[in-house]
Figure 1: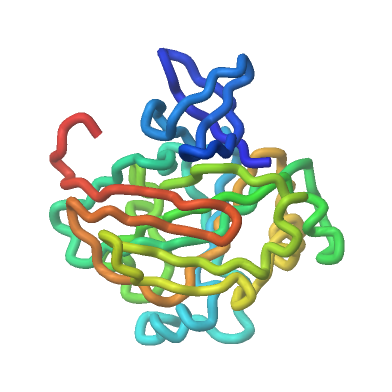
Figure 2: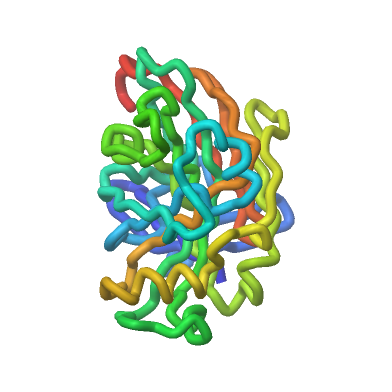
Length: 259
């Protein structure tokens, strides 16, 4: 099942996906059916700890080779994000006025289902509630001259779109068999596949739970493949992951009012 969190008529609602002949709808608990553009989309889960992975696709690692200090022996490059970094489907993300190169990052996001400590890799997928899509923007010229995501790159308000749906883990038989695509203004810019993850979902859960307790609602952003490109105010960015949906986001100028 596909789940969503939305704001409608002054309240926050849980909704599920409802397929109809004339287009997809959101079904509320009271039976109300709503169109996608009638609501404000929120991140599909109330986030706990947000853990993001950098350089977790071999092709993206090669793409950024000039900036890297990583080696084959390094542990996963993980960092934390605050909840204010998240916005929902159809939201707007500000592009800093002084940014020279800001790019999208289409990522498989993993939502944890239970408290998990020292989980073996073989048991990792048993800790997953479901999956969603993240677009975790980065401002490349804000990064240090060695690749380590810093605070103002990855914790900017509204810098990470999440959604539109949380898809139950039972409906995603293999999270490592999913195509990822990103379009900018209708042009395909990024095309990857989760089979190319360096550290796959069970490996990440094993690694993270070895030193921290994962909790229900924690979110793991698993990294992006190659194909990042600069985006500017006015650009419409759509991230798609096979079986999970299409996450739409629009870039706006930093001084735009009402966003």
